[in-house]
Image 1: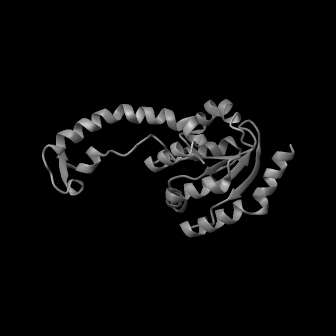
Image 2 (image 1 turned 45 degrees about the vertical axis):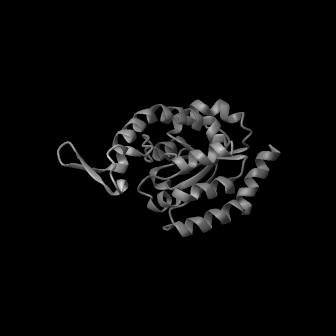
Image 3 (image 1 turned 45 degrees about the horizontal axis):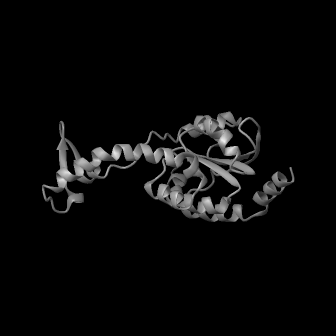
Length: 210
């Protein structure tokens, strides 16, 4: 799995991606309105990373979590080499300010720090943990999936789906509809069955033969 910001980010990295030795590419397309997939991907991204294998790169427009960054760094994952290392430098550069804020607040000896709140500005209440441990809030917009669908000649009605292709300039090899799945468990069972099944295997055989 390769979480990306947008299709443009894939275009920029395409020359390097081709050198990674992938035989097949995919794009998992869904927006924030497709709640079952949004919820599934919180943990399911790790399943899909293993199920899709090392020779199939499946892109998805998602903000990488800290856990994902650690997972890919430790396993020398393609995503880490292509995108993660550069992203981590940006996060590290911003962490100095966060560290100073932490040191300042720790001196106040506030107990039960993660349950404490403070008021910022005009009645704007935030938790102290948000200030001391800010999440990695990157400008990832899942609605970009609709633009990606259009690039592959699909309409909004085709999303959510999983598409497979050989190159960004070519047509899709296969489209797998996902609109009929309404829970994380349904998606879990489907993906495990699909990636172990004959349809996915046949696409790989064709690419290896070509």
